[in-house]
Image (tube, rainbow, N blue to C red; front, side):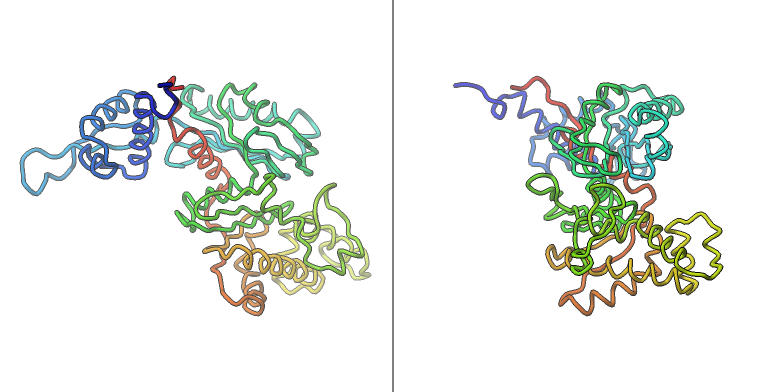
Length: 405
């Protein structure tokens, strides 16, 4: 009989090793007997594999602080070693690139950032990213062989299987081979996904929606993005374009009349809700008014316009109310299709969410028969954490194949 990948002894051992390691990652401080019972794997097999994982530094043993109820020796427990390997998380945004080093628990050990558009104009963006990664590793005294993988969130439609950014308007990328270019320079395994898909993985791993099965994350930043988890799995769509809500139309009359793209290739919602679109509309109102408005003397940002709207400034309020309306009606459309457990808002504009969410909820109450919990993310560095979660999902569940066919 021809031996295939799935019936070789090596492969069965490989599967058991992955199961045990996954179990220990989620259930630290346990025993060999508990693993055997939980996974229905024989005690001798568990013991042999655990010994291997200890030798490889994935696990360590430690005597319990408390003796068993029967007395005698204190039990020996197994712990997952969160410092066995590390992950690099990279979030490439239209405004900022953020890069971090994480341990296996998702704790961020080091972080750096730089402005995307400045790097695009002044130097090669990928070289800047790779030099920053190397600088962080050097700062933390970490050798590259301690890095398990690199997770990358890219802005735009991304072919995750081949690591190609199909289109990222804010970067001017079309069919850009991001994974292969980064692997060439870093000499590490690289996994690439849309930046909002990466962020929603972070929410599912360590955020408010921890372990939830049906989640929607909407990011409000340079543009608008949507990450979707259905039945516990990322939903990417037939051509990796699921969640591209930036193209959603929330005012058919205005869409018919035409509107200005903030970046070439951006959609209707991007061009009405994204930070640059808020600034552009405020600039128009300031230009049209004869009053000496204080914002005429300031560097305009979406944050400053929100600040003025919170103080009931008429011009700023008009711009922000229009923005909030577009957000609310977009959410009505998304929620009625997916019926998620949670809708979470992220991105720079979401930092004003506690102020504008009551306005959004009024629209949802009026137009939706069922209400969904809506909140803003409470996770700092969400996309970096999500990039770590992407590594854990994609990197063969922490273990590479061991020569099986």
